[in-house]
Amino acid sequence: MNTEQPNTDNLFPLIEDVSTIEGLMKAFYEVVSGEAGEVRQWKRDASLHNSKAIYSYYSMINGESKQLTLSLKDFQKETDLMVLETPFYENEINREVKIFGNIANVWSTYETRLEKGGEVVRRGINSLQLFYANNKWEIISLVFDKETERNKIPQTFKASCNFKIKKIRSRLLPSGFSTVKQLKNYRIASSCMQVFIIWYVRSISLSSPIEKRIKPSVNPISACSSIGISLDVEVPGALNNVL
Image (cartoon, rainbow, N blue to C red; front, side):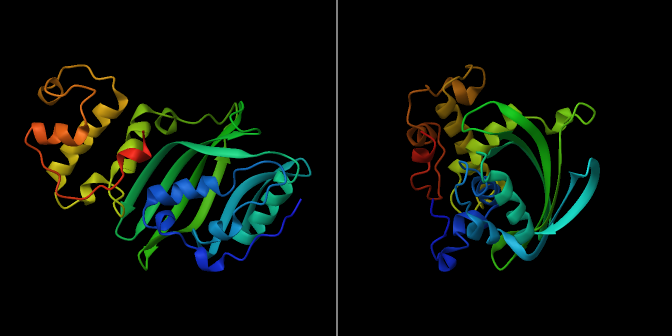
């Protein structure tokens, strides 16, 4: 198997990877997932991190649990040894984000599988410290811990319906926005996002005034117009990404 990576230095970072926290977290889990012996996307991974980023976690060494702190490059080497003969797939099931100015802390709950679409063998939480500079988010440091019988993931950090809705909302937003509140026309955009989600999931209960006037089969853009809401921001192909 060819384990050499093509020269892709000039491709990274990808704008969609670093312009929003949503994009960064999506890339964070994509780069490490793959089949046994498959070359991981380490150059893309490096573009998500500060050049001095560190990883810290507990590991069993000679039967004793010890804290390790590694550079990104050393952590990638450790991961390569692990996935040499074992498929490894990791995905996010919940995320809590706190932002102040140019700094952000992300609590990301994950599931690990040893075959694509297989049984979950491990869960845990990644805590990422991010910094925003030069029009991009980057990972400054990361600490993580896995779930055990004595160390259960709190209900607050478990997978939730709200997280799934947030992911749908973020995928419908125009490029460059990580939350609806970042849009200039917040009230109009927020109302339209609600209509999009109602139309997408197609499982509405006709309870609110806005829902009573919209049928699930109606095109959401037309639905916005029919209730007097006009979207003054361009959302090219947004719906195609989720249908």
